[in-house]
Amino acid sequence: MTNFCENDSFRSIEYTDKLLNRLNRIEGQIRGLKKMVGNGSYCIDILTQSSAASAAINAFNKELLSQHIKTCVVNDIKKEHYEVVEELLKVIQKLMK
Image 1 (tube, helix red, strand yellow):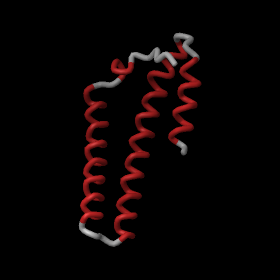
Image 2: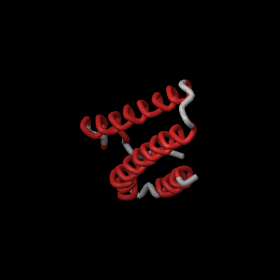
Image 3: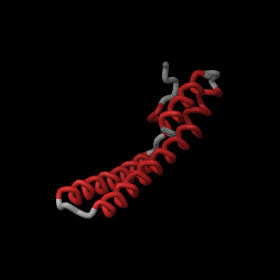
């Protein structure tokens, strides 16, 4: 599928930094999980941390998807590039698995 949106044109430095900060926190959570497993932590504690990391990834996805819809999708539809709707539906299906 052709990607019509000029992706980078919609991401300000501030927004990019915001996304990267979220990813850095998620990365820290994953490192913490690895350490917990390596240290033989209690399963419930590991699962609790894993759930928090999963929620953080979901929040990241929601933020990025929202921004994508508000910028790229709207812009593509204005340019009559309706293929973007099918692309959006496919990515939403992946996120909902």
